[in-house]
Length: 244
Image 1 (cartoon, rainbow, N blue to C red):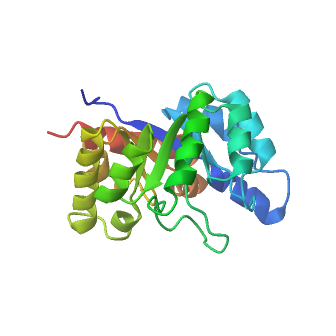
Image 2 (image 1 turned 60 degrees about the vertical axis):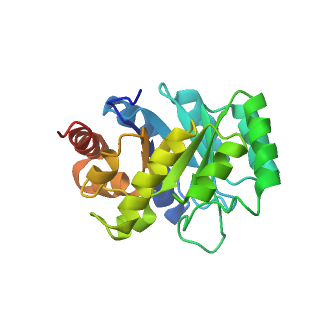
């Protein structure tokens, strides 16, 4: 049964981006956790990158101890990160691709060329009691492979839609991908580049049960405050979900 409420996870990486611009002590990412949860976030997402460009190991440690909802740890599929996840045991790990030179994640995981590595990683995380999600493009082959290698969920990359919002090929791909993933028994998540202005059509896709959104919320918070920014997004999602 498809839940009428879609979960919202707030990615707080960009709070750390501001801090790291000065290599100072503020703003402190964990201070956002209670605000986001109070404003309606169902979980907190943090991406610990290999180059530690924003979130740091110490941030992840304290965030994991502070969340009262759940923590979704985004990370590359490398031994160092898997060991960290086994120790911290977040509610979920989303495995994502990383390139040192990219500004932000540019596309989904290449599952065909990394099947064995990802299968082993998912098995390790399952053994630690951690749910696994794979950040992938919404193409049928990737979705089927994600199911075959034992992932609990897929997070569909919404970047192409965010660059060309509205009805079109990118939104159609998300709809088709979400249906296909759900038919295989996968939980369906989505994220990347979503905003209060463009989230509606994605939030309305019934099979998508969770959205991960970060940059827009932190950018909007500069002008209206973090709690208001989260509430605005929550309202936009709920309105789209319940539209006749």
